[in-house]
Length: 150
Image (tube, rainbow, N blue to C red; front, top):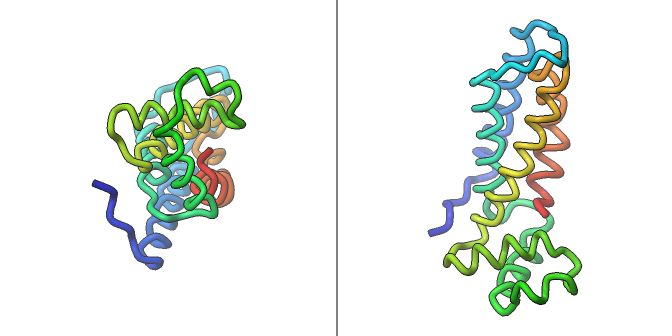
């Protein structure tokens, strides 16, 4: 069952709430040495929220129709054909999700988890991880990751 789509106002509110969450964290955090890794649970929960927003998007982004077509094409592909495909990693995820009887939103969720993990690693290497994530929200997360998951 696919996630239920949100209206335009609801989506906008969700984006603002995500931005506000990281803004509050950025205001509260103290600069630290980048080599002192700390596991901030609230920061990581915010990264999980980013992954969920990317993964559970429905008909959002310029890539939605081509991704539906790729997902349908992946049903006929095999692992042996991956080297000849332009985006083998993305097709691999599509093929695996097809094997398990999944839907396109599951492919987006896997891509969102990969993106959020990479963003979290990058931000946690900074002196102010919350601020680094906050700066990434408007363009890198909302435009790039939600618009072009592959």
